[in-house]
Length: 135
Image (cartoon, rainbow, N blue to C red; front, side):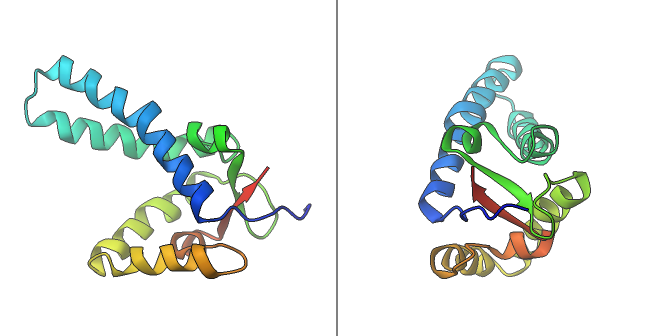
């Protein structure tokens, strides 16, 4: 594995915001138009966003649209390979459960970890054995 520079807090936040603007916002607007603003719109939007965040890195070598634009990607720590479905399930589902069961405290811990740790890994990175690197 080649040594890549870990992606820090601000670049990761930028990628997240780009994903929200480029994918989540238009998706929500399309669903709003299709459903006519019924309550099911939120559920459909959440499911599609979850699937986007779960599957896009699996099929696109660790990238989402926002990560690709920012030049960062998710890789496995042990071999630098792109994440598989199991890895992304750990990274998204298990981490989400940890964040919910700690009433958001783990989210704050994750932000601090990315900001101060040398390897810039957050809790969900540790759970899944991943890291976000600059390309």
